[in-house]
Length: 83
Image (cartoon, rainbow, N blue to C red; front, side, top):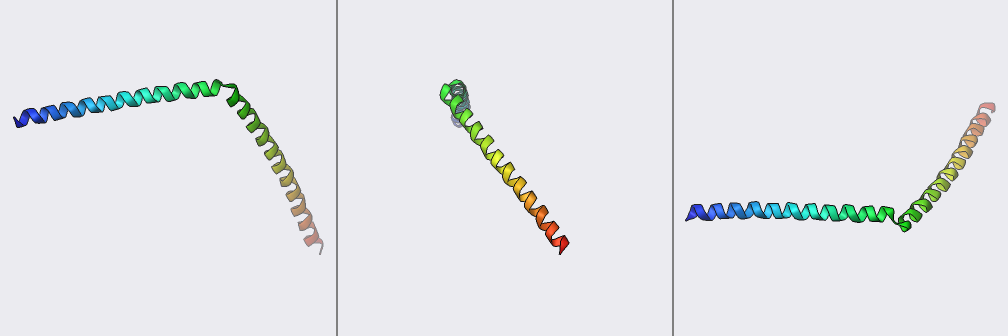
């Protein structure tokens, strides 16, 4: 009797493990499908374009500030050297 209960429990554990894996597989497939639909949508494309524009503006401004800071530091060194 004890052997049969143990074997039934093992079967149930195996079946529940298989069910969990199949649910996870289905969930992953669903997420992948929805992500693909999202990437193809026009809203996503517009958001991506606006993000690219904002990033370009940010890096351009950072480059300008970098150039100004380099000029300031070079001028500061020249002033110190001449004193």
